[in-house]
Image: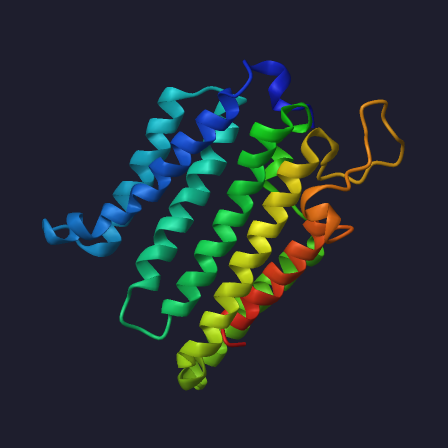
Amino acid sequence: MAGCAARAPPGSEARLSLATFLLGASVLALPLLTRAGLQGRTGLALYVAGLNALLLLLYRPPRYQIAIRACFLGFVFGCGVLLSFSQSSWNHFGWYVCSLSLFHYSEYLVTAVNNPKSLSLDSFLLNHSLEYTVAALSSWIEFTLENIFWPELKQITWLSTMGLLMVVFGECLRKAAMFTAGSNFNHVVQNEKSDTHTLVTSGVYAWFRHPSYVGWFYWSIGTQVGDAV
């Protein structure tokens, strides 16, 4: 897929994605709509329909493709925040939803800021791999079944907190690696050395040979520990 940066001024994709991510996250205002008289499902349906209509009105491809993905991730993040503060056994799953959506969005945003030449829609990593998708779906099914039959497992707060700390550490380490590597970082493994490639040994690379992978490793484990799986 062709890089987005070649079709727009530098930084425009980052600003577009951030604006639409925040637009999607405005679902946090949904409780205000329900207090105004709208039922939860009705308000949510109207919100989603209104968002999509607005994006279709404001943007044309390829910018719409960026906007709809960032807005979707913002929407998921907002729903995760609402779920996190709910008085139910699903609140820890809300932590997971927030971390998952923020991970995918921040991958695109950091690439847009740090290495726009390699930027594409694939930078969201939403189409990561079949194995990643199966693993994610399996964890959702597992959480749902355990929450139905053994809800007490989902109330181990200390374990979920430890998982959340692992997620934060892993996410920060990975993003630090991306910023430190700069244009040397790419989501696609490079088989040939470019003239612009340099060996990075400073910053977090002085502590880890592959800090982006290490960060993602701890992030992945943390999401599961956080759900007390």
